Amino acid sequence: MEERVQKIMARAGIGSRRACEKIIEQGLVTVNGQRVTLGMKADAQKDRIEVKGERIRAAEPLVYIALNKPSGVISAAKSPDPRPTVLDLVDHPGRLYPVGRLDIESEGLILLTNDGALAQHLTHPRYGHEKEYTVLVAQRPDEKQLTAWRNGVVLEDGYRTKPVKVRITGTKGKGAWLKVILKEGRKRQIREMGRLTGLPIVKITRVRIGSLRLGDLKHRRWRHLTPEEIAELKK
Image 1 (cartoon, rainbow, N blue to C red):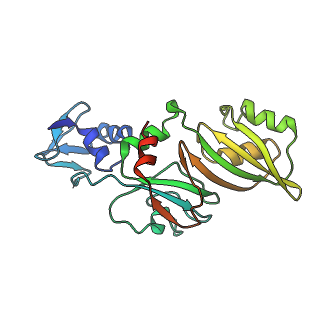
Image 2 (cartoon, helix red, strand yellow):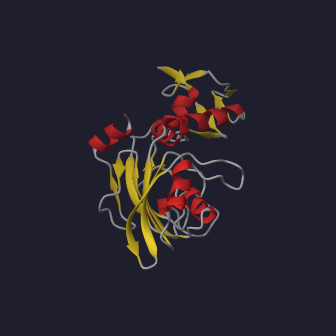
Image 3 (tube, rainbow, N blue to C red):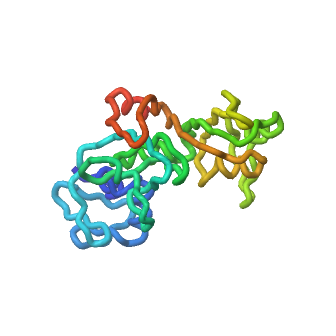
């Protein structure tokens, strides 16, 4: 059966559908030796589809894994950095990609999958999927600082963050634990919001992506999602 080439690529684990479209636009995809343009269709069972000169494999069974990333591990499939990546912690054959990255100092829930369509659905800003974090700040915030987070903080590049749900859940010495819920995921966003509002960040742990929760999964451990969890994420 013929399908749009970017859909075949996404299902084969090349990336999200939008990422696959960009690869096609760069002229890096061929079908039976013919350069592909957006909108072209192919039959994954009959046609020879190549990306950057490498034939893509038939679609693998879809895999969904939850990992509790520790600090010091990179949230990427590959990295020139010698430190370990999240894939180094997961004993699973085949191609997987992290959904919803965490900076190297942060820890907590990472979703690993080869389902490009779900990856796009969970990360595209227009869908507004919530991501929940437990955050330790070095000092107890006042109401003005919390209000700044809730209304949006103007970053150094001029971008104003979307409103954040935040509340104090406990104290630790001179600091405080916060529950933070975002609907976007700009690079090091929580750390930057803390720095710009005078709340140095001590620790960040992500505990939820959409409907998927970290639960009692221990550091460096991983597990396959249940069918119910997968169905809930795909809603």
